[in-house]
Length: 396
Image (cartoon, rainbow, N blue to C red; front, side, top):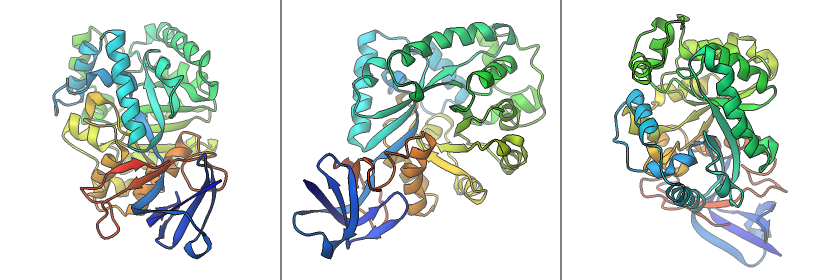
């Protein structure tokens, strides 16, 4: 009737416990209790390493899985975006097989839930029968005001396919990025996403801030290459975050992804804005492997501590196979831990904080009675910390 799990360490979602504690679940993996070893009775399953709730991947692009190993590293974001647009087409079978492999890899590595970016309905066949939980962010883009209503209508048609197939609460419209959404489209999205969870790629490269501050930088060449007329675009004189954030005034919760160039002035803008009066939370999602892949740069200790010191909510994502060689939250954690961030913080970001960001904390993210968060083993610890040799494996 019960299963009992003991390891060198148990991370509950809130804190690290040492080896004298036992996690008790029913046979389906629903948490019953955490008890002392002396009170656990017989048939305790013992593991070397750290047991943790399943990981939450707050940012992925499943539908780009067929682009694995096709785009060179360190191109910079502007060239990367152009290459994705140029080569993302593939046959339905190629896409399906790649998405199946990606989903299986995430499952095996201990991921239990994914915040997934969708530009098409290609991933629906996978998600209808998936062992993972998904929040689908149906992505909206269009940098010309005159086309805003048309672009929104096109994306809403895709959204309807998700709504007719998957629970409404798990699919929401979202802006792509500050450099790809016009003022009018931001305004329309604000009306469409009242009280909803959205996500946005934010400050992934220096050119985003250059565009909004001075109407200069690499994105001007991107618009030229795509034949997009931006003569009507007026720079705000502020960073991209300070420019897009005021558009959302309807109690949205926001996952801001990448944040590679987010600075103190941006955090102060968040704290100053009326945004805080709306009972709204911004989660900052770190995707260090993708940042290294594209920009040859990752958010360093100073950047991470900036978020931590300002009481920011932090979560972790893998991004896609187009910009990552694997879809492993543990691999992302290893890069963050290299910045000498305490293990307990990083474990929280990978589990309960992520579950809160995706509004799944009622069932995932922590070993609390009644939840079914999955159980993952991280092995090969060194002095109680994750090592370069550590791997993650789903136990239940």
